[in-house]
Length: 59
Image (cartoon, rainbow, N blue to C red; front, side):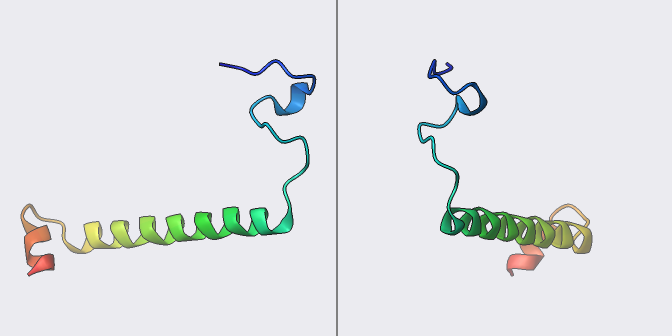
C-alpha cells in the first residue's frame, strides 16, 4: 500500500525531515554488523565443506 501524501519522493516514510547523523550512523553500523556476520558464515561454510561438518564445529 502506498501513502498518498503530497511528497512524491518519499511516499514510504511518514517523516518529512532528512535523516539525522545518529540515524545514519545506526544504519551504517547495522550494515557493517550484517556484513561481518555474512563473512563469518561464508568462512565457516568454506572451512567445513562436508555434510555433517557443522556438528564437528559445535563439538
